[in-house]
Image (tube, rainbow, N blue to C red):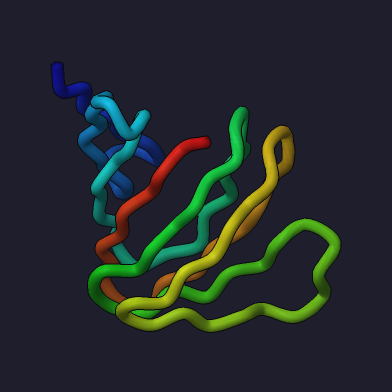
Length: 93
């Protein structure tokens, strides 16, 4: 079954699916700056556009373009900035 998620007044949207590989989402975000919290480990892959990421404990933003992958620990908050629309895939562990 698919589940649609919407955050930040609809500026970030994703569709989730659960299968034999676990839970994953594909989504898009409009240009802007956002802060997310995690409940599980998240492995994010940028599938279109460019995203700047500030991971917990880091002081410098890291830029990920198409094909870029980063991992976020569970039970933390992290920030992202997009200067243009971005597409992503997220695998939850």
